[in-house]
Length: 344
Image 1 (cartoon, rainbow, N blue to C red):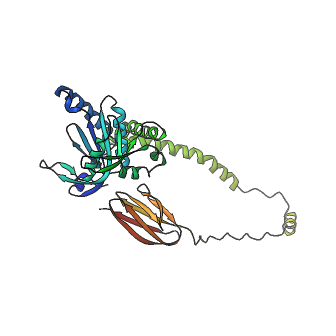
Image 2 (cartoon, rainbow, N blue to C red):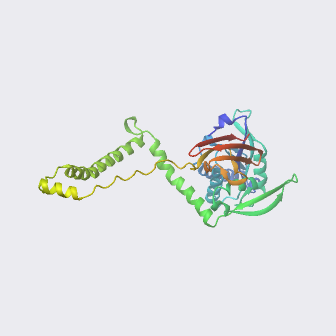
């Protein structure tokens, strides 16, 4: 993952969440302070599960803009978590996926500019208080990640901004299986966050708490394994003890001669299948739609590994903002081919 410092001065394709407190300028200064404090607390809680190096937060006075340098799902989860925790606040939310340039401002702090944040602000302006809208570019990427996500969005049509630029927008619903799945995932992450932080902290005598937790578990596993193997070892020892012959030597020889020897069974052929498929491993940044021999096979990420039959295949990776990547690969039986590409 590219850190914020490493990304400074570069143009990246990122997910941008823009938030705005509706009618913020119409209330008194005292009310503005209360609204902004509640807004900041809710935003910090929504971003708790996203590492600081994977996001850039820009305060806009009556709201904020957050650029996510990692998975697009981070923006969706954070936006829905914020919306679910701020029912009393009249906040409009908009998400866009587009190019963003990170740079240092006059205070040497990381700032962001670009069409990605501009479109996110336009999409947010079309929302009503409490509504979450996303752009078409964000919808096309996230809806491919899961079948549940595809049912989470509803097409709201085209909107025209003040610069006479049209934007297709999709609303993110609050009901249905997809919304419940996202809410459950966010809740699970929040509930496990405290335990994860406790384990990573140092414990007594300088030992990591994770080691203190693992040590007794390892001891129990070793003792359990010993108790399980003991009966098997005793059974093996008893079976290995020689048993005295009960039959007279002549009788044993007569029976041995009367019983024909069985031919040894031929060992099965261990030769591998010459037509076994090979694998293609993808490392695409930030994302790309993968086509193999003209057929769409998925979006990477999350697609990491693809099995293909031996032979030559034409692989094409598309990103809406950049020229496509074309490559012909030769797959060998059981072999691995790696494709790495960063759209920039």
